[in-house]
Picture 1 (cartoon, rainbow, N blue to C red):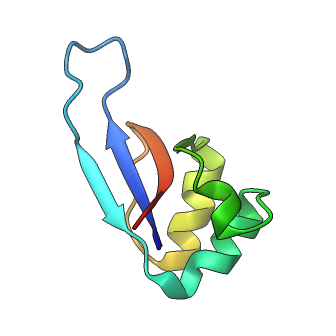
Picture 2 (tube, helix red, strand yellow):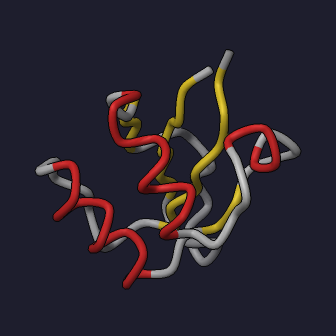
Length: 79
């Protein structure tokens, strides 16, 4: 299992296609799970979670990855 961040244009646009995707290095799983307030990776596996701008920024700093701020961002578990 691994974490994946996806980004879409806000609902005001008539475009629901995927605009951003990041497969997060599994080495960061535990820290990201804690940052988001979940008990475990398995507990997160129940769906996709909307990220706040602050959470996205924290994950970007932790992983040293670019994460856009102009999209609606979600994080979920991929298998």
